[in-house]
Length: 321
Ligand SMILES: [Zn+2]
Image (cartoon, rainbow, N blue to C red; front, side, top):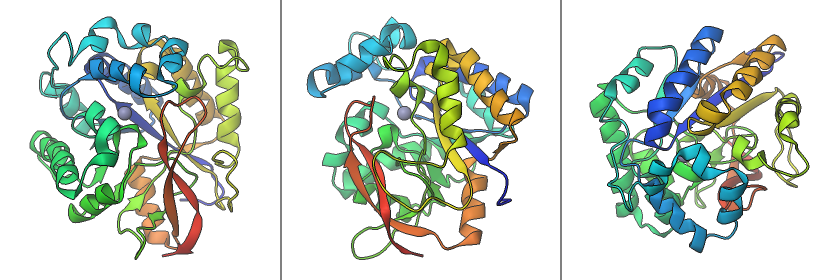
């Protein structure tokens, strides 16, 4: 990676059937027209988004977020009922050609869990065996459909545990995008550093800033662009910023791929015009692993503004590998 050129990785999470069927083709069309590669992270199992409604009662802040982001309008009523009143459909298996089309394109495709809702809500309670079972459901479904080994993973809802890190090692993954933070790192697992490179998302997601009273809808694009132009910064955490400007932005097929498509197109187009270079997460991982000097950091669960429930966040470095 050229040290002087600011770079961006677009990580596009696909959590639901509607995101897969409608959001993915629209986002791919925009990115292909601009010649920009992205990393699509696709939940490989059932869409049980209806169960997320359960979080209204179990997770503080979910209801206000659901109202603020107009969840029913964003996801559609059917999606809100999958797994409860309506049976949970498998996301990729009904229309595998969308998945295969992406594999043939310049984009990268990696699994984003099996059952997104399950991982999001229960991972922190799972032992090693249960974690392994769920993670392998995702990677094996990916390998069956893709016809090639799975080398990366992006965890649903930035939920990460020592057990999930150990299974990622067992599977021999090159990198995992499970956390929020400011630069790629190896997770401090206590007795030793983890072996799988962690690539954190460095910026807030659109759904974390939509509807914030201090950011009117007309200013969302400028607000986001301002964040891209600055070095990554996570909350009040103090840290040494990386020598080069690199951001990882997580978009959602359900959000940027539907109601906020124009904003996404304007965002990517403006970043291109400003000279940002776009790399997939795999390209980023390969460059970082060759360069070496990667920080080792602890991971802790923390609240982020605009997000309901805690997510796994990178702490200041405790060493280098
Ligand atoms: Zn997700």
